[in-house]
Image (cartoon, rainbow over all chains, first blue to last red; front, side, top):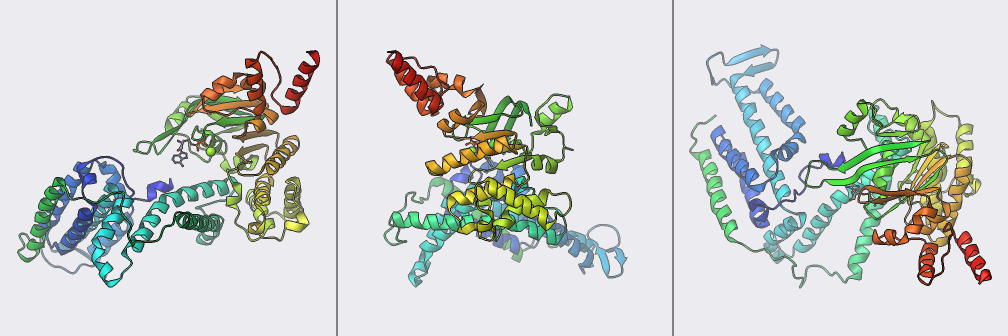
Length: 278
Length: 296
Ligand SMILES: Nc1ncnc2c1ncn2[C@@H]1O[C@H](COP(=O)(O)OP(=O)(O)O)[C@@H](O)[C@H]1O
Ligand SMILES: [Mg+2]
């Protein structure tokens, strides 16, 4: 139940995409996001979508699972679309017919408005899908290792990169544990007749208290215990620490680099030399 | 309350790579008035099974379809869990559920408020202050706490054993007919364990006609239960009275389960040619051994 909500959790299968170097995947995600934001025409987004689709196929993550990530922001998508359909002020004509399809007070539905909001919807969906693909195909540990490695230059200015990465990986590791815990506590309070998730807003907030307080207590207890355990094993931060899994660049990574760098460069170029501008 | 389940299966995270089959074709009946034990290895599905008893887990749709055709899947007293229209609130009032480490569900500022939580939730309408007080006093006294001394105390200031008692009081405050407990004595010292078991006996002979208890402690099971179900990998291996069950000491050990001390001693004596036929409670076993010694 609760776990359906937490989109973007690692999906454990073996695939080409899973095997890529996490640093690469992070860089690509950034590149991809930049490309999607710079894209000004459907063709550019279409190319991004095609590449993303291929990545999904190669990752062996089921499409349904990926779409579930979109479901999480469905409201945002619909809201954006609605605002733009009703208020976009363009006059351009894309197909035979009047430029203004409907006028009702301040609401104005135009051809340009429909096209533009479709564009925004595609863009949003692509953004969510590509970000969730990173977390679907990369374990939290690999992800933080990758981030730590990418941020290494910051160590020169004494930025606590290792500590930051450690905090991240602990936080990521604790998400499923705390979700489990929430479900357990909710069940226990439901068994005592708690009515969770119904009634008006005030009743809802009051119903959260019996879940929230035990959850917080348990989180603090776990944090304490983890701290003690790390102390007991003489954990002392980033200095001179070696890694269990070394990140290595391999031939697949090279293939990935060349392919994706080409696509991203192409899409970015299209911003300056548009093919079918909106 | 009588519990009947037939061919009950349950899979967590169905249709995903995390799918775990937690229950596999479980059929068993618990009669009203029993003190029913459930044992099994960690991960054998005990907790999953008992959570079904007050509707905390939804039955898979395949089982609901079977129930529509008139088969029994899971009934607890007069409640049919496969029926979507079953009133879960009414069910949960009659089925008290004490989870593993129940002290982790305490939340209120005072012991009184925490125990009163379930009572107020289940009351029809708003109960008067006197009614609530009487119920909370009853519950706290039953679990062996001094009502006047603890009612205003924060539950988080109590000792571990006391916290657990408060948590149990918070469940029995509605006087459930069926009390389900998931490892109620886990993590307590031997004295605390014994006190909890005594408490359960008191409850069994007063408010809660039927008791279902999940436990790892075989001595506890041998001493107290009318019948015992053994779970292994989501299936029910045996349902037997302890007297019969612990005769199969070797089979239980092969399943990776522990047996009561008395069963181990019986087996050791048997290997030396001494047959003792006890019901595996410490008292009876000692008596039988002494009787044997006198005869030889
Ligand atoms: N909330 C859950 N989500 C997913 N799997 C679970 C959950 N709870 C239990 N399981 C799995 O179901 C199986 C049975 O667990 P459980 O009923 O807790 O066993 P027991 O109480 O006998 O130790 C185990 O394999 C466990 O990993
Ligand atoms: Mg359990």
